[in-house]
Length: 458
Image 1 (tube, rainbow, N blue to C red):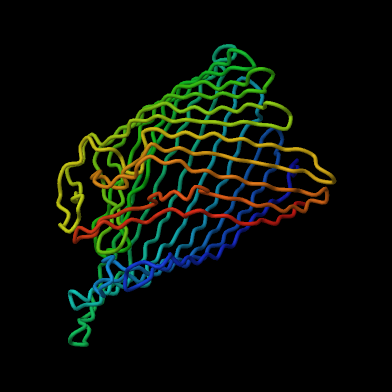
Image 2 (spheres, rainbow, N blue to C red):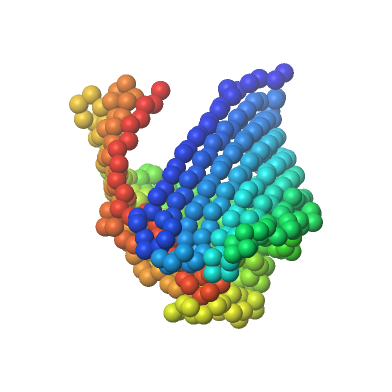
């Protein structure tokens, strides 16, 4: 007998977003125009004592970028790029009932994606040429996995899991057209040969946990992770970058204290990376290179305190030590810019975008007011600073971001609210890169942002 225990659930999202940066001292003003949509369908049902789950998802997006590549008021270099992405995934899972000394689950996963650059146009007036690139990359991934947990002693569980993934990347229909501006002629189109690469990997995990009481759980785990290699779509005919492998060790505790009014979780970890994948800008396009070896260790903790029924406080912190242990082919620039990047060693440098210390505190207050509910919230995030690139030349110094929100919800489900982000208007680097002539280009997070929200909940 098959009984449906939950209805089909469907979620979809469509987003259009156009961003015009504040006027800058360049001959071309930057524009980012993006569109995205997605939907998912989840099906849960019981088959006797077993649980079956199916999750189907699809996403599509389009992005159009225009920006001044040389970053100056002179008409030297400019980028005009269109990217399209389509993704389909299907996952099925069969699991045992959740009670008993032995529990298990098995599953399969399928992923199919298409990434397109059509076109990528680099106008290099200083070199008298306009280069137009089109390229496509297809990704097909199939994986099977299984995990089992057995209570080896009272309140002590051993978990073993494994996953085998085979992923095929195909780069095809890659062309490069060059238009010689002074002569007004086009050179013969260069077509890159189609290329295909398959990456196979078995990954696994081992975990041991013990529940000392209903309030305290301790655990230790080891996980082997894998990120597939692939081709840089923006450079037709280029060699593939290698997969990234991670060995992760972690110990920690999870606790619910004082009649579940206080929740405290603490974990310590050590990560060992092989062939870590690093982003860099190459002729105006984001590409991925392998950064040899890296390691990262640290501690993170989060705390939730339910002070009263209406007031809840939250906080968290993280301290890490992220470094390259080997990176001989690292693109390195100079602080002043103006000098082309050279290849050097980045061994001992801090990993990109990784801050040594982060922390956050927040407060949330909810109270009945009139015929509805009033909710007030505020939060502060602190970051000790990071380096956007592997060479550690440019640094984002320490900063704090303040946010707040207010929302009033009527009994019929209608709500109105207001929010503010980065209320102190801090300038924070979101992305930074060095172009071949040595110029450092900084892209910043959103400045002070505020708005009004309307909602309705059935």
